[in-house]
Length: 458
Image 1 (cartoon, rainbow, N blue to C red):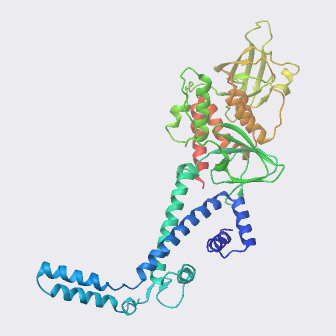
Image 2 (cartoon, rainbow, N blue to C red; image 1 turned 180 degrees about the horizontal axis):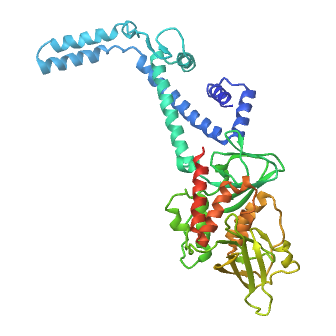
Image 3 (cartoon, one colour; image 1 turned 180 degrees about the vertical axis):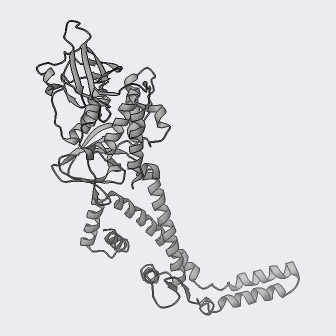
């Protein structure tokens, strides 16, 4: 397509394109926004070259004769100044020399360098383009060569300036500006001609191609956005704001701070300094990390998840802190995950709305390993939703942005993804944020390393 664009552009700028060719170029530019910018830049360079044409022809023109009246006056001034005819003679000699034909002095020896050959028969694209310039603009060969160099420098400079103003720096060009969180027609987002999967990070140069009636969902620094077809564009052109993340202006606004931390986790490079912004507390190294339920939950029968060791079983006790008379829920010799709704001892039981519960987790036979956690239940339960990976990723993102904190519900979504989606950039970064907010240092560092490894692949 780029070769066709180049050919059509040259024809149109030279005024040699047919109506069909002009229409074809318009269609190409409509399909690819950067081609429209390139055409405008090349037209500006072309117009600049045409403007220097008259100057080049003037430089090629032979020198004219000095009028007799002016010559006499000049000779008299020289005689008065120097008192001899030597100055007059030199002036006359210069005038006569200027009247001699210039062609003999302008012979250019052939110069060969690599694949270029200037001053002989056409043997390269450079020479053929130079001859075309001569016929089209009416410039002499030597100045056509100069003009071509000016075209290259001018066009290159304009395009470079244009790219610097419209395309982010290299770090942003290769960094994440959004994440693909789902779509109805699949796949519609590509990089280098290859489809991009759900959960992958997107760069400004990735292509979005949506037919009529289709749509995709993106996670950006500003939040979730849906894009409907028909649409053909780069991801960078679809985003109204690519600031990546921003710091909260109010130290009292915990919600804003948490949102900022989530932006940092999603859109900042994974560097060691990132831990100071995301790893807010560090729990005792002796604890057994609980993943769900944690903080608050909107699930009456939450999934119970924790960090286990191979070959070990665990005991769980859940007590209602608001109702001392309620019988505690006890589970012995279990391994994660524990589906509350499917455990025989829990059948028919649900957690109470707007409640407070204490969960004690210990390794079976080792009561001293017990760890205690408290979590709240919300006044309203969340309705059951799709288990498709794209929906689980979007749901986890929305949960992490919401108040009050529902870290356990988000981790339950992220840690039950199928392997391919669980190792996606989006899933890993959402887990990084959740682990950091809970102070799970070992999990935080392990996920950070997985992200660095993933992003190291071009």
